[in-house]
Amino acid sequence: MADTSEQMNIHAQQAQLLSAALPYMQCYENKTIVIKYGGHAMGDSDLSRAFARDIALLKQSGINPVIVHGGGPQIATMLQNVGLESHFEGGLRVTDAKTVEIVEMVLAGSINKKIVAMINAEGKWAIGLCGKDGNMVFAEKAQKTVIDPDSNIERVLDLGFVGEPIEVDRRLLDLFAHSEMIPVIAPVAPGHDGHTYNINADTFAGAIASALTAKRLLFLTDVAGVINKDGEFLKELTVSEARELIHDGTISGGMIPKVETCIKAIRHGVEGVVILNGKIAHSILLELFTDKGAGTLIIP
Figure 1 (tube, one colour):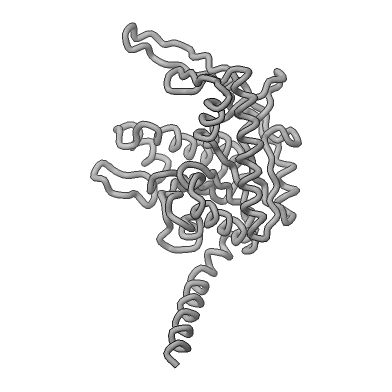
Figure 2 (tube, rainbow, N blue to C red; figure 1 turned 135 degrees about the horizontal axis):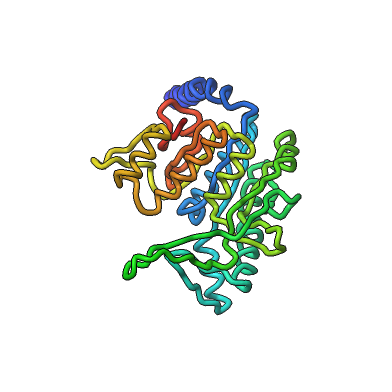
C-alpha cells in the first residue's frame, strides 16, 4: 500500500508540473525558438542527452526549434591533430585557407552530425545543415579593428576567412517549420566572392533568429546570465538597461558581444533573447515552461 501511495504522489507531482507548464506550452505553440548550443553543455554527455530530449519535447509540443551550434574547442583539437598552428590577432583566431577547410569539416561534419544523431535517438527527425545549403546564408569578410596600446593608433585586423552574415534566405527553414524536421545549422556560409567563411555562432544564431522573427532566441552559455555589480543575478533587462550596463562596465569582457548580439536581434524583430546556463540540465524547459525562467531575458 505504501508503494502505491508513493507512486500516486509521484504521479500527482508530475500532473501538477504538466498543469503548470501547459499555459506556457500554449504560448509558444507554432512559434519559432532559435537555440544557440555550445559551451560546456556540448561537451558533457549527460547534458547533451538532456538537451536532445528537450529539443524533441519542444517539437512534440508544437514548437518550431531551430538549432545553431558552435565548436571552438573541437576545432582547436582538430587543428592540433593535423599539425596546423592557431594564430590569433586581437584575441581572435585567424582563419586562413587551410584552417577554414578544417573548420568546415568539424562544424558542418562531425559536430553537426553528432547533434543530429542525438536528437534522432530521441525519436525526432533532425537534419544537419550549414549556411551553404539552399543558399540559406551569405557572408562577407569580417572587419575588425583594434587600438594599438603603444601608439594609440587604430589598426584593421586581417582575420582571413572569418565572416559576418549579410543575407539570410528563410525559405528552406520555413519548409522545415511546417514539417517534422528539426534543422541543426553549422555557422559556415559562402560569400559572393566564392570563398567559404567561418562565422561566430552567436552572431550566426542572431542572424537566423532575426530573419525568422523568432519568438525567442536562447543562448546556452557557461554562466547563469547577466550579473550586476553586487553579484546579483538579473532576471530581466530592457535593451536600454542592457546598454547602460555595458556603458558603466557592469557587462564586460566576452559578455559584451553576446549582449550586443541580443540587442541587435531584438532590433530586428526577435521578441525576446535569453542568456542562460547550459550547464543546468533541462534549462531550456525551465526557461520556457516555468514562471521563474532560468536565465536573463532581454526584451525591447
